[in-house]
Each structure stands twice: as C-alpha cells, then as structure tokens.
Length: 108
Image (cartoon, rainbow, N blue to C red; front, side, top):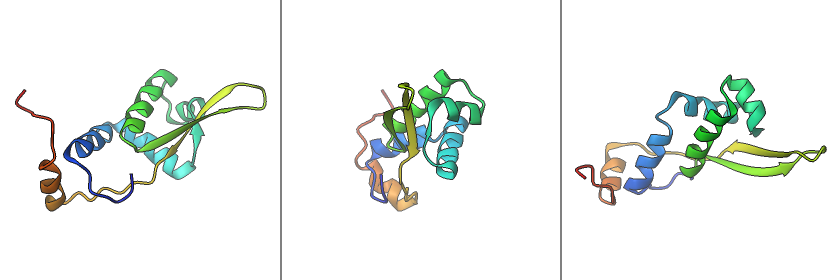
C-alpha cells in the first residue's frame, strides 16, 4: 500500500491493524531489522509464536506486511515477513474523502 487514497473500509482496516501495541512493535521491528521469520521475530519481541502469527495475519490482511514461505538448508519451512512500503495521508480532508466510500454501517 503506497501513498494513495484509501477507501473508507481500507482506512478502517489499516487503523484497526495498527491499533494494537504488539502490531506496532512488529511493524517497527521489521522496519528496523528487515525481513525476519516468525520464530526469530517472536523471540525478539518476547511474545509467543501463536500470538505473533495472529498479529502478523492481521497486519498482512491490511497490507502492512508481506510474507514469503522459504525452505531452510535443513529443509524446514520458514515463513518470512517484511514490512510493506506504505504511507497513510491522515488529514481531515483524507478522512472526509474516505468516509464517502464506507460500506460499513456503524449503526447495525
């Protein structure tokens, strides 16, 4: 997700994905250290692999991280993650534009 206008639904998904301190730490770790695999990243962030995987899934669904499965030299499958390039223009005007495309009705 590069610097482009987000639809209202995309903006909500992006903000929701970033609304958790663990997920902010994941993005920061990947931005600072580059691509990493789940087990190593879990050790660095001091959280369990299952919890990290859930956070990575949410970030990937929002387009904030990417993943690639690779085989190590000893034949183990390693799922590598990297921070995706993104920029969010969060101004009142950008929010007003995004609101016009919302399909989510908060009153339901």
